[in-house]
Length: 69
Image (cartoon, rainbow, N blue to C red; front, top):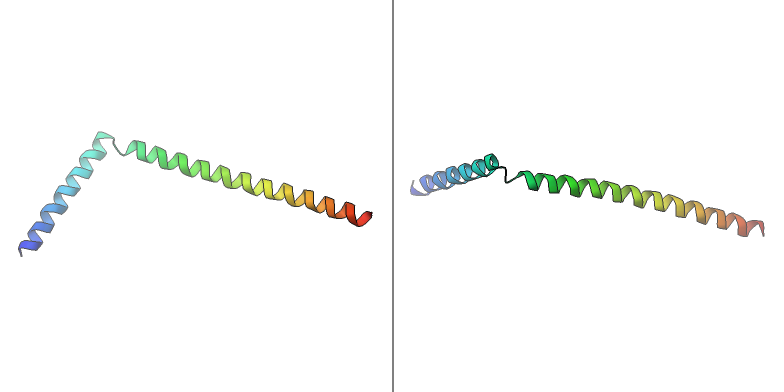
């Protein structure tokens, strides 16, 4: 029974502290950082896909030129 009361107290305290931090706006910077990270990751993936497509086209042209020779 003592463990249950202790767990409830710790849980309540943790919930209160998280709510207070949220009200103070301390999680806003974390949210902004995560959004910037995902935006950059998405842009990097698009760049990699475009680079791969361009490289494949270049190799295709080189192979066609070698075949014509």
